[in-house]
Structure formats: C-alpha cells, structure tokens
Length: 222
Image (cartoon, rainbow, N blue to C red):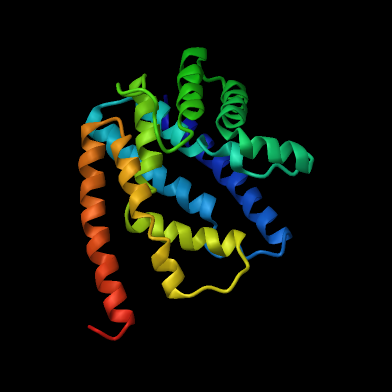
C-alpha cells in the first residue's frame, strides 16, 4: 500500500479524534491534552517500532493503530445512546467504521479484514489465550496499545484523561495513589511479543525510579 493511502487514513483518524475533542469541550470539560488523540499518536509510534523489528506489514499495522479507537470517538451524527453503545463495545464499532472507511478508499478486502481483526481484538488489558494473538498485525496493535499504558507515558495520559473527564480538585498525593503499577505489571504479563515484554520491563524499571525521585523532590527531600 502506498504512503498516500496511509496519509488518508491518518487524516481521517485525526478528524475523528478532533470530533472527540469538540465533544469534550461541549460538555464543559477541558480539552487540554486530548487524551484520545495523545494515546493514539503514542500507539502509532509504538506500532512503527514493532513493525520495524518484526518485519510486519506497515500499512496494516499503522492503519490499524491510527483507527483502533474509532469506536471511542464521539460521532455528532449519532444520538447519545448510540454513542454510548459505541464506547461500550468500541472494538466492534470501531472495526465496523474502519472497514467501511477503508472500503470507500478502495483497499483490498483481505487487507481490510486483517485491519478489522486487529481493531476488534485489541480490547481489554488481559488475554485468555496463552499463545500470541494472530495474525501478527493484530498482536502488534494489541501490544502497541498496551505498551502505551505502561510507564511514564501512561501516567501522563492519565493526567490528560483527568483534564478531559474529571472536574474534582486533586493533589499530587492522589496522583501517586493512581500510579497503577499493579495494573501495568498485569498488562506486561499479557503482551504477545518478546520485544514488547522487553520494552515493558525497561519502561517499568524507569517508571519506578521516576516515581521514587518525583515523590522525594515534591516533598523537599531532594
């Protein structure tokens, strides 16, 4: 697949992510650091790294990464109940929307089906099966999505999500309590690829040290 086609996918994803941002603003919430956008950009970057290492199909993996959370992007053409259903089953609805968009671009049916599977299968933090998700592109989309939830990136994304969704006052202490290390460790156990596990271990090692130093500095101990 050509780079021009991938650019069209990226443009569409950015447009849909901007609609999510507009919805957040319409609800009287801050869209400072649009979480869904920042998360997606991070997933795309991680997918590129995994594609390079694993030798996977670039178009399928990167298109899937750009489109993986379409189901969580607010659609102003639908009513609130339909948007709620989309968020609750975002793997299915996102895959359906992506499939229709790619079909309109003239993408081959087999390629659409593989991207569909990657989006449909990426939902959740744990996997029931012990063997890696198949095909490889779906494993890469899963791992890229989950790696974004491990380490300093995950903490920064949580802060962005708080701006977008929460209105309560907060403190640094509350942020520390939400460092989510146990969840990150569980996610690490459910990655598909050896390189992903290695990346997760490095992220966790750095993150633990970072939190330790940050707490000390904020309390005036460093």
